[in-house]
Image 1: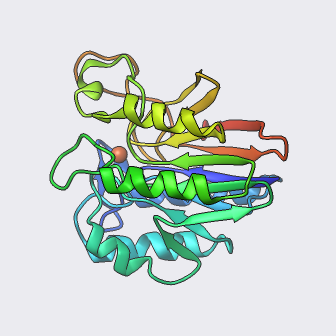
Image 2: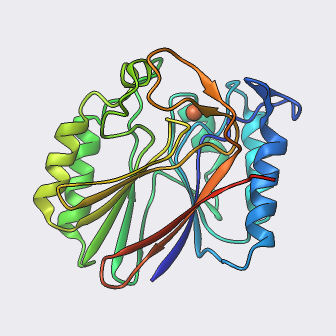
Length: 249
Ligand SMILES: [Fe+2]
C-alpha cells in the first residue's frame, strides 16, 4: 500500500506575491501544505503533475523546493506546459526531488511521463516517451501500475480546454490498456476535478493548488472553487481509495 499526496499546477513566481488570476500562488501552495500537515493522513510520497512555475524563472523553482522540502518525503515531479524543462531538471536533480522518474513500491510501479510540446499549451506523448512507458510496464514485476502526466488523456467536455488537451490521449489509453497492469492514470492541467473509469482504468484529475477553471465551459473562465489537493491510497490488490480535499475555509 502506498499513500500519495497529489498536488498539481502550483504556478509559482519568482516574486512570492505573484498572482494567477487573482490568487497569490505561493501563499496558496503554503496553505495547501499546511492543511495536509494539520490533518491526520500521512503520505509516503508527493506527486506533482506539472506547471510548478508560471514565469520561466529559476527562482520560482527554488520557492517550490523550499516549500515541498518541508514535507520530509520524496517528491516526484513531471513537467507541464508552463514549466521550463532545463530549469526544472536542474532544480530537481537531487533527492528528495525526482524529475520524470519511476518508483517501485510494494505491488505498485508509478511511472511519471512528459506530455509537453515545447512552446505549446496542448500536449502530445512522444514516440520515445510511449516507448519508455511500454518498456517500464513490460519490464516490471509489479502487479499494478499508475501513470502520471500533465495533460488529460480524455476530453473534459470544455471546448477551450479540449483545444489544449492531449493530442494522442486515445492512443495513450489504448497502449496502457494492452498491458493489463495499468490501474490508474493521474493528471493535472485542467484546474478542476475529474474522476471516471475508462475500460477498467481509473482516470483522475486534481484541481490546482491555486486558481480553478470553470467546468464544461465553452470559453476560458475561472471559477471560485478554492485550492485543492488529493489523497491517493494505492491498495495491495490494485484498488484505489482517494479523497479530494478542498480548502474551503
Ligand atoms: Fe496549470
